[in-house]
Image (tube, rainbow, N blue to C red; front, side, top):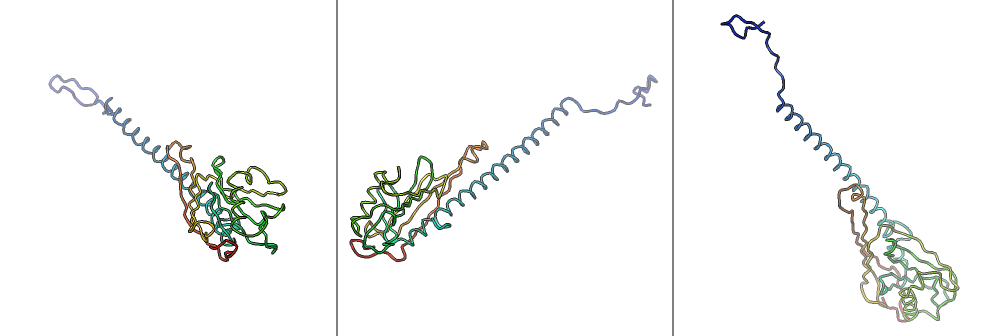
Length: 229
């Protein structure tokens, strides 16, 4: 027992100390700030992980299209014997006189181009069908013009089978720049731009976008008949 008033002789029990209302509100505020910081940190780490996963996926797509597969730009260019970049930005590659008949044939051509509608990079090859009249820049120009007109990508040309495959997805842009204008093109530089909205889905408000650069050169270019790389 503790005496609250010694003079009067009245003794009362001591009151235990307790939090005041202001102290409780301050404590709740501090806890709320800490919890908010933890939630924001967790969201940032999750977004960072999603960005990293998206960047790795884009790099895998780009590597497959540019250098990491037997259908890549680098391998096709190195094996080709004549190159041309079309007005529509496609890369037209003549693989050489494969049957030795001194005539170009559509089945000897590979075309790599960007399709903006599907955001893909595509590789087109052909089988069968009639041959051109000979070998030369004039005949290759006919194939380039046919590609620019859309007749080689909208459907299989008459008398030809067509094999079209996607070699890269999430592609926003694919640019080819020849070292010299056709028919003197020996090598090309390329730029491939890919993007994903992975972190926008996670509400961070930004897109994932990466660009890849490189070059490729023909190993054994064809010389003669107007082709002089």
